[in-house]
Length: 369
Image (cartoon, rainbow, N blue to C red; front, side, top):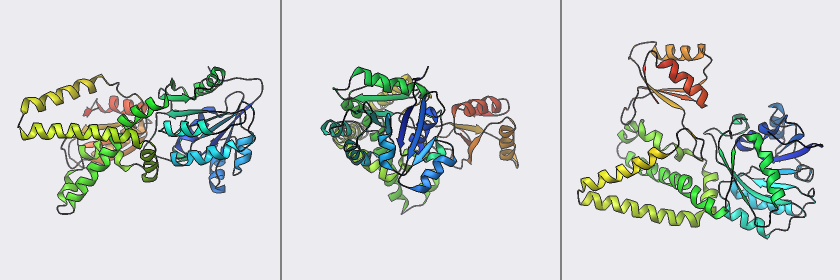
């Protein structure tokens, strides 16, 4: 597996944060590959080098771009068009492949279609994986493993060019999927962008109620916090994503409003069987969804544990996990048990630690996964 050529190929990554840094770690040290990181900020460049994420790093846009065989734009969606514009005016290497990691594709593909790259090619990309953490400090060579990695080539993209990028991405161990950019935005809008809007609106609704009665906040610590966690996303990033996918989202929000109006009608009519049927339909579809598969929404690696309420129990559990080399990211005592099946919430960074902890603690406690 992998990408091997006689002469080293240079991969330049613009924006070496969580996504770009994880790509860099996938490629760094592989045969025939040299990874260069770019940031206009000298402090960031030094950080990339100190952490060993890239082979080289530079503040020079031109140097990073013109020496590259592959360019990954891992910058916010709102910055993609200026970056592409700038790249289109540079003497790039013949055959250079430019791609991005943005979660909206149609708008950037339309923009790239209008540009005149000199013997270079743009292929849209969206690795459907992420983390609640950000920055190069959170980068991991395992971030994309078993995740879907969507590619949206232009109609004029030669198959040989597409194949080169697909081959390179084999180092990520992701499942590469070829898709029309419009279809991508329809699907990701429905399964990611719309849920983020709903979560934000719901949190803001409860926050307004809380102004008059602080018990809303106190009692919302359990399941409510879990189902609305995506409302804590980066405001600037989500501003750009939603604006760039606004046409799709406007239609989705109209459909959502129709769904909510249907529930209004069911409640007004006190239609118990109708309400029950909605939950049955939802449960059936949700039950078909693959569990723990990496997707566009970050997976939760949380265990809920029922433990007796006596001194030292939290420390005892933490010590048990530490003795087994299990990295515990966070531990929380749940005060509100509504919709939450355990008194302790244990959070882990990855599925391996999550499973090891579950198997260990099941020997002594009731564990809910």
